[in-house]
Length: 259
Image 1 (spheres, rainbow, N blue to C red):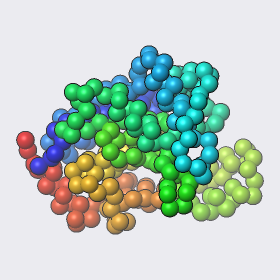
Image 2: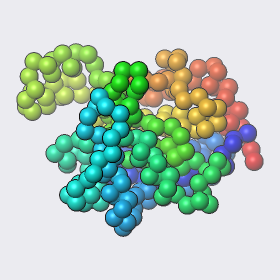
Image 3: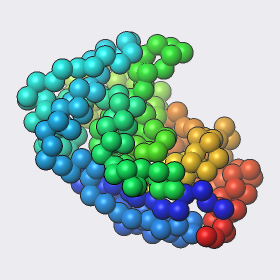
Image 4: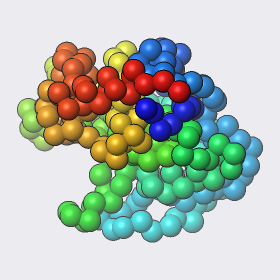
């Protein structure tokens, strides 16, 4: 039986490819659970919230989080919530700090173990890895609330090795665009039409984490596989779309449970 009895998913208006209504339908078909759609989590007028968000920016990938004192320009930028493809540069944010801010924005009544909050964002969320002492981009940060970063889905899993090798010879914008065109379809891009299908897998990972405590699967043929390469992401979520035997049994059990 499901531990959670409700899922609230928060939209990201700059990424219509999320197709949030279809994701709601996917969840309700898969699990016997109530799913509610809400506006962007930071749909607020509170200046201090945007200041907190701006303060989570990362400027040194090789150092653990150091709180940033944002300028008014940076705070105003967060208010605007600009499409990442329209930004002059991609900003990085500490995912766990963003998570803390989101948690405080959720009412006490709904901030409980029975309700799973899943927040979509276009921000590139990262976490500091104590093993190699550097920040890494993350597509998903599991917990409650869960953060699913569309920029992380694009940037975190690595593109083909050949792509990077060709890019090393010439970093000009013109050459970069040529290489992207050459490998088009072999990795996700911002505003990719395949984004919604890919997100289904991350939704499943979030629910599995809440129900079992396990984040990912180590089986490359499982939809819950912890992908590090774009080719594996496309295979598990678009081509294969299957589960290993262990997770198939768990999914079936959760899907057939009732209140």
